[in-house]
Image 1 (cartoon, rainbow, N blue to C red):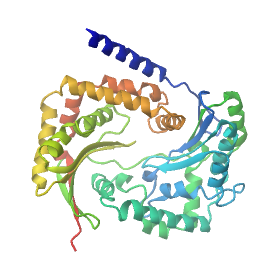
Image 2: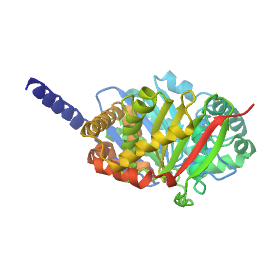
Image 3: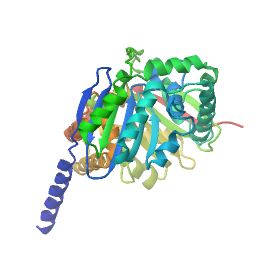
Image 4: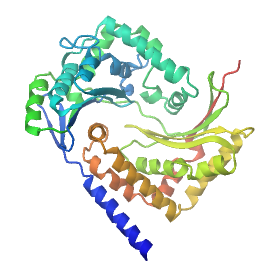
Length: 437
């Protein structure tokens, strides 16, 4: 009886935490099309100013890949009012930090300052949007930076090009076909005018979302936003009319080599629905059931109990137009690919033919409740969530209600998704093997 009372109390407390997690925000558009989202939280004297541009690797064209990621670096080169090489110095000298990142679908920049420097953050992002300097010295400098990044994170790292192999083979028509870092040959051959045209085309206010989150006074913030961003000229928004992929209806097998590995890896990859669709959430939860943590079914079987694999993982990568669901495994000792494939297929079959246990289902729900709380536990996290939900999901308020989507997923939904999307005739098998010397 005592244990029951404690569990009820714990559940009640956790419910209070979740209810307190409601994120209040205000959003509006400037006449030039810039979407603005404000979130006031005066509990700590910090402010994050961020801008998400709806441009990513998929907006590039074959022969000129890597532009979106390149701009993640290039737009720190400076403006007429921010001298070259001083961007980071200005931020750090004023007690701030900043960064940027790029995906297939968007590019994101942010600064976090003590709240007495909120105006500085707003001004700097407006400078970037209004008139970033795109010149030859900046292009040449950042090209070398990107080359080194590619060497470090991909070309010289074991299994560093594994995601590239998945993209190359899952997508044949859609521009998800290449990684965000793109091709060095493409960047080398691109002319300065092409970089300038890319900036003019995509870095415009009506292709951007500005988020200001933290210790702000909304009316003052709005005045600064109007002052710094209101006069930036809107651009032309081009339709994102990308080629569609035909469904995979026959299993395909390819081999990719990597000079940096000694042990092979085997990937079983499936093309799945875009991240706005409920099935994308279901598949995300299914991937957690299969391989999230040492108590997950695949880890327990292949790594812990049978000692057949050094590593095994199921992962779901949500993207704006399609998503990826894939299994990744590295064999232990003399274990063959056929053995690992048979064991993974057996676990898929179990999910397709029977419901997971109540205990496993509750564990999944707990995991996602925890993720939801942690994702919005900082001002930077809240700013990123607000921008992502507006730009990629089309609903800013998902920051508050996305957890309800996960809560609504049933055991039957998990089974149905496995039956619908994880069949052998819907996948690409990638044998990722050491390069012969």
